[in-house]
Image (cartoon, rainbow, N blue to C red; front, side, top):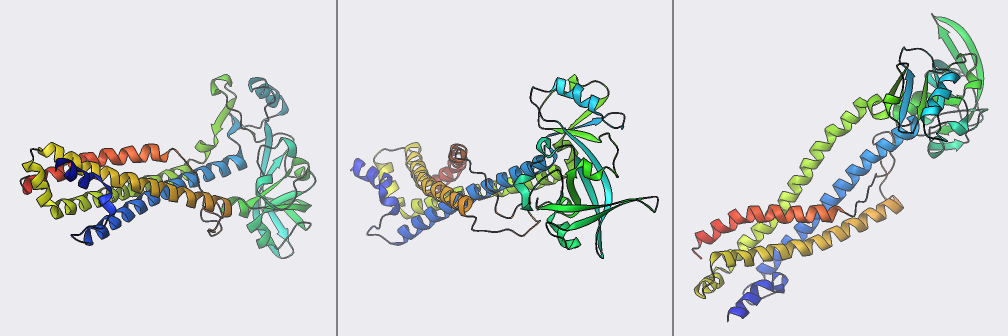
Length: 379
């Protein structure tokens, strides 16, 4: 008799139709579906959130390099400084020498302010421009401009732009330069104002020295003497990353509340189950089983529902993520999320973190709820 009753509580009765009522099946199925959906949403939210942060990080680093080296006295850097820094950096390190200049770009009746990024050699330029190039090619003989800027100026690959330097309300220099490529970074400020090109093309606008160096090599700033200042890209774009972190906390709170909904859904289903089978619990009590043993049976049922829901939820979530990552079914608006497709970072270790956490939280909460319920029915 004892074995038969225990089998009834620990068997697949969780999802089976019994003679008493079909209602139990519907409640169990509903609980299973809600728990599975909760886990799916948790995995999707965490994967997209992490993917978004990594996408922003990668775009910023690709377009700016990891580290920016400046003259601490706000002066220019020279080729001698390059030799000093290369002696500090690991062998075969790339150090991009960059000059910048704010100019006016003009095509026919259209004109826009632009920020010129002049490099010494396209092969040694740390920026990953090839990865964001829409049209044309990168060379030392032509410039590349942002997509928004090309639309505002009504130019395409092969067009000629007029660059104008204005100092103290006077036109100092004018240069005609051919557009060799158009890029799209999904960062509005870059695609609207930036122009990249070899410094030879801008010789009438810049001097022979450099405003700063860029590198992706990590080295200790203590190796630099008092002449140099090194900043990583995250310090330079501090406001952007503060904005990202500001959104990160509410998203994690949303995930936490979804997990609570998942747990309370299982607990509520079991409370209904206890109420529905209270007579059977009285029989268990009559057979000499104490409240701890009854609590263990109910908790084991909760674990069983959570385990099955987790298998379905995690599997379905990873299938959806892989499909979206390969096919890009969902397109995002331009210049809103730094990417045209949903950014995804698939972490297959999430079940290792999420499932034990759900078990721990559910065990703690159920200890109070089930004890109160068992005492109510005086099991």
